Image 1 (cartoon, rainbow, N blue to C red):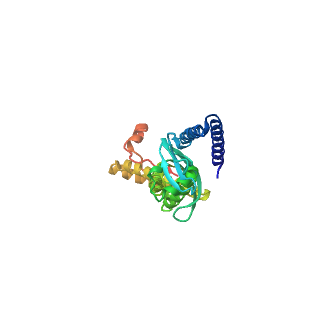
Image 2 (image 1 turned 180 degrees about the vertical axis):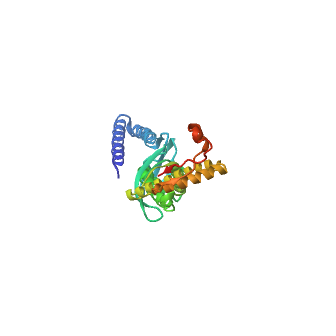
Image 3 (image 1 turned 30 degrees about the vertical axis):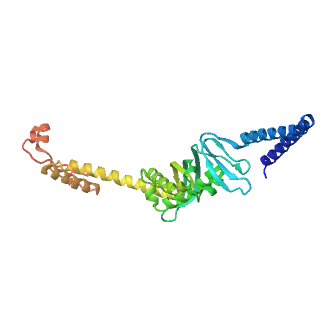
Length: 298
């Protein structure tokens, strides 16, 4: 028996004592008939006051009430926002359930991707409670759990959902662009399947960060660096091929000759090659007509 029950008993005893006193006074003044009339009127007034005070229940907006049997404490029903009447002799009002938007968040460790590597995931959940949508079988249990344990139960189920979803991905897949949104969709869908039968309305799931071990991050960064270098080299080679494709046959022959001379010069071999006649005649008229100039290249 709670403090509220003791208070009600004390109040009832005080009222009963006052009624008896009034009845004795009325009996002394007007006889036993007057005492009975006063006693009856006082009893009716007291019953009406008690029902008005103890039987009228007001449930505020964005909440739902719970009603239990007074003796057995068995769940009876939920009360929607508004004014309701309960039988104070057989029923008692339990804790209210908030139906406004609520949130839960956590930093879950030990989530394993494909390959067994442990990950840490930061996430946040926004939800509301809808007790009126519970089945008759689930209502008694959730009526006691939702007022105080809704956030704890949500965290437990979200952790299980993350283990289940991320366990189907490799480390490489978890590093791809847009993976957070994909994980959020899959986790939200799975969370709704699990939590809606328990009176939850899952509004939003956010995967804020996926943390990997340091050695894994270092290896991924090195692999990404090599991949970027290979892509840059491939683009440079593609540009070179486009330029070379525009060369004429004579240009290609000159290019090959220059490459041959360059390779021989790198090994310190003196090379004699013909120069352009026009270039010689421009600067030395005495050698006009001579088509060859000996030049050493090293």
